[in-house]
Image (cartoon, rainbow, N blue to C red):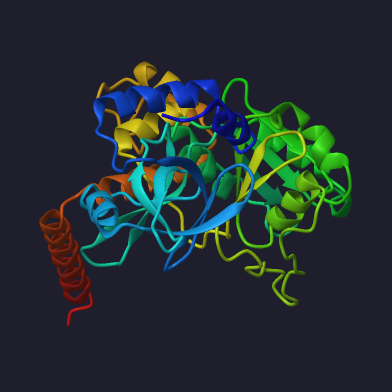
Length: 365
């Protein structure tokens, strides 16, 4: 199926023995889509095409329409980090004929404000998510909770990287705050993203065959951190905007790069909106402290809002619980059908009209 030399090269871009074993099992159940397929990894996805890698060089390619249609019908899409089978035609053009089943996917949901909810795949086949947050105006424990939920719903291990340590006089205090939010065994580090410090601090996760994705808001320092981990200027970096210190989008596409240690780094653009790809029940399991205290509530169906004897409200910090409820409402709404969302909107409108009528009656008007 594939030569040993092929596999040796592909290990340098993240092909592990476990991944290969899964692919072999899949292909034993599936007819090969072409006579002589090449196993390649997706390192970048553009609007009209994508870039593949064979372990030696990047290869521009396109997706066969049938493959695109099949994935779209399943609410799926090709993403950076995917492994694919591709073939080259007589003109020397590479075409993707089959997407191998990913081990995991990081995905979010986009809501158009009306009836449509779209699932958007961010990356596939990652071992660790580096959640990057700057120790400046970018610092937000509530946003970090959202990122932690995103990666844990996908079964990906999180490592929080606090950047711009040199600019923050209370970096140690911030680090302790973040560590308190992490699940058992979770790790957080604070670094200056310039120089050798990031590679030293993150060395345990930069082992050969590992794939890491960097996630965070614009201006958090993801591109600077990527350059530091690669020991090369592969990504553009830029200063934050003056006035509000908000980050600029210096990274515009997700792209995969190999490190000298043999790991792969996927840099991503800053996410302006981040709605989780999961239901309310799964979200509850991610917030372990809430799940642990919930059985101690007086009422079995306690919603942890205003009920008496609520162990969760007594034991969980108010802002964290408020953030959990917000994520829970989003998850419930995003899993409704279009008809259910329209019915819910009509109910809200009726409540609004009734409230305005009561207020008008009180004013005597």
